[in-house]
Every structure is written in structure tokens, then in C-alpha cells.
Amino acid sequence: MAFAGVDTVSLLTAGMKVAVRNQSLIANNIANVDTPKYNPARLDFQASLRDALEGRGPVALRTTMARHLDATREMPRFERLALSSKNDYNKVDLEQEMADLAENTGKYTTYSSLLAKHFRMVKDMLSGLR
Image 1 (cartoon, one colour):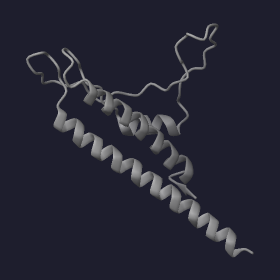
Image 2 (spheres, one colour; image 1 turned 90 degrees about the vertical axis):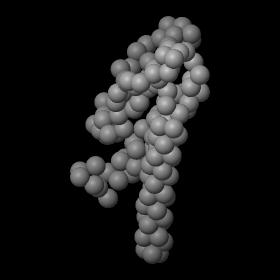
Image 3 (cartoon, one colour; image 1 turned 90 degrees about the horizontal axis):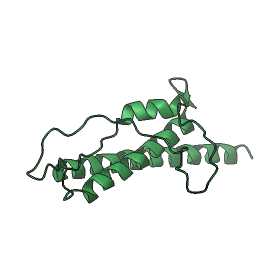
Image 4 (cartoon, helix red, strand yellow; image 1 turned 135 degrees about the vertical axis):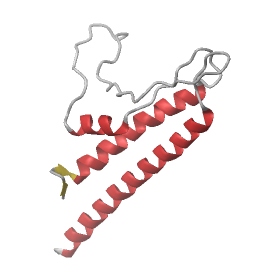
């Protein structure tokens, strides 16, 4: 199946991968809630999903030492920087981060449920052919 010219499995898989990256950023923001001068990162989910679907990813670089940075990791697109700050210039709003975490978890759960349903439908279809 395809949706807007994109394979359903590719779309759902890309959505799950972007949600995993977003989960990591949100968790990092929450972990740094008490770090002075910390500015939280926000992922532009739609732009990152579009990039993943269009195959725009990292440039493959050759490493000569095992300690080199992993250049194959995809860098997220950031949505915005926090504008408000506490006295220690930490800009993490814990309530916003928890809301973002819940929303992101919902996206991941939805994508994984739809992907599982898609595979169940394919399995049922193939079982019916016997």
C-alpha cells in the first residue's frame, strides 16, 4: 500500500525512527532541567520525517580511527530555541517537556500499532491464498 506516493511501511517506519530521535532529545532536556545555562533542543518532527522519507540523511564519511565521531547518525532539525529562562539561565520548562514526551510517546505507539496491523493484514491475506 502507498499513501501520497509513499510506501506505508516506509512511512510508518520513518515515523517511528523520528519519534525515537525525538524521545532522546526530550529525555536529554528533562535530564538537564537543573543544569545552569542549558538551552533545550526541540525536534521539528514534520521536517525530520520529510527528510527521512526523501532519503536525505547523513553523508557517509570514512573513519581512520575507532575513536572518530559517528558521522552516520542523522542530525535532527530543530524547531525552536526556548525563550524564557530561570535565574540560572536554564530554559527547560519541565511541564512542556512532559507534555512533549506524552505526545511523542503517543505518536510512536500509533505508528507501531498501525505497522503491526498492516503486517497482520498482509499475513491474513497470504493465509487466505492457501
